[in-house]
Length: 207
Image (cartoon, rainbow, N blue to C red; front, side):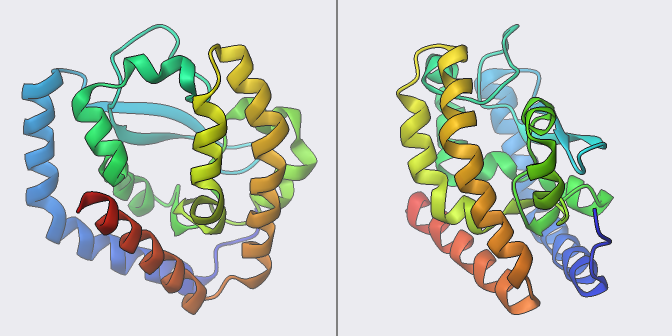
């Protein structure tokens, strides 16, 4: 992975620090609400890849019942495990709020390719060597352009094997093309535009 540009890290730290202060009461309120609604654990930690060789623990609020098959991409085969509270968090993307911790630690940027699972990096190392030349992000061009279509494809899948096959065949290459467009055109203005589009989508879904 090429070093993160200084402007991008400074932007991430300033924005994450500001959000951490402003959103602290909401974060605490969500923790207490989830504790009452669905109990422990509050957080879900998933291994994701920062580079083709380096993994990190991605932190989210838990949105599903606990189970032994938590690995892999979420498709229709896991829809029945989404809790009522989890459905609300997913609809508004508030389940991703704990990723501010990942940003402050330097595992993530606000904008970039979504961090992949190790299994897909191992299957397509040359592709992900290009994609992960950028620091992974909470949101990004591929997330904004392709997320809805990806969700539509995966929600039709009835088994973990089908979900994996559809994701690997249909989603990985299309998202990678968008991630490489972002890589070649990233700038502070582009990042701000993608963030504003993401926040606008969250407001519309929450209203």
